[in-house]
Length: 299
Image 1 (cartoon, rainbow, N blue to C red):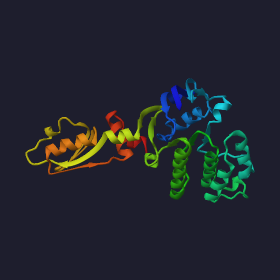
Image 2: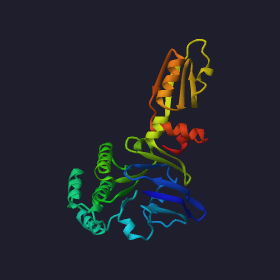
Image 3: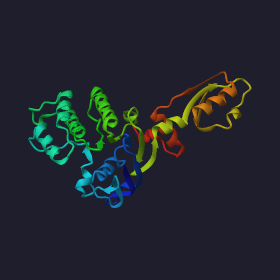
Image 4: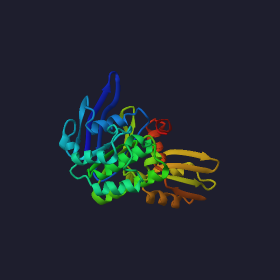
């Protein structure tokens, strides 16, 4: 488990991460989303022990990270900007990581290198940006660590490669209990793989929720009331948002699908339909209630 308590990092007068309390459970994929400058990379660098917090703590399985080599053996960090030793070839970097990570799987490394068609006989500095990103992912998946920190990992990858990486992450989560922590500025990018999502805004956590719980307890309903039936008939529903277009009313409502369905069956409208919400729609609903327009926070 990764736990941050009161985590704060400042650069002069600018607060990049502001008093964050956050828990990331094992064997789940945690997505940290927010616009550029929201503090995602700074948080991840503190979790990886690259940056020292100005105040607060971040621990992995109860152990602090900064300047703790044994703790750092438990995770692999993939930065947004790829860096490799000058003039190094893939196997040279592989040998470097194999000396750092006790569980590094060389056979898995070879297999993934072939899967992504990354040439061993070329210097890494001749790779494209996307190839370098894929190579970092190969090292990360082969490292055998319990945690994988991915900073904007899907940026620069084409749609096919993005889906392939998502599938590999899902397999390792199921196969060996990997816990990936993935940052992104795009909610849609993470919707199909995340178990838990945190929304970071101006250095602080605006919202952090388990997706299954969110999807089970918030729903969209479209309906048309019968003539003579007033909107007071909706009393008893925990309505977050409501929109009307002619006779068609759309509401976002908290509660179980069963209780909402029972309410509308008893109401006997002309038409009603309970529609699944996307992750983006759920976050829009949650943040608008708090006075934020998520469309300005997340692309």
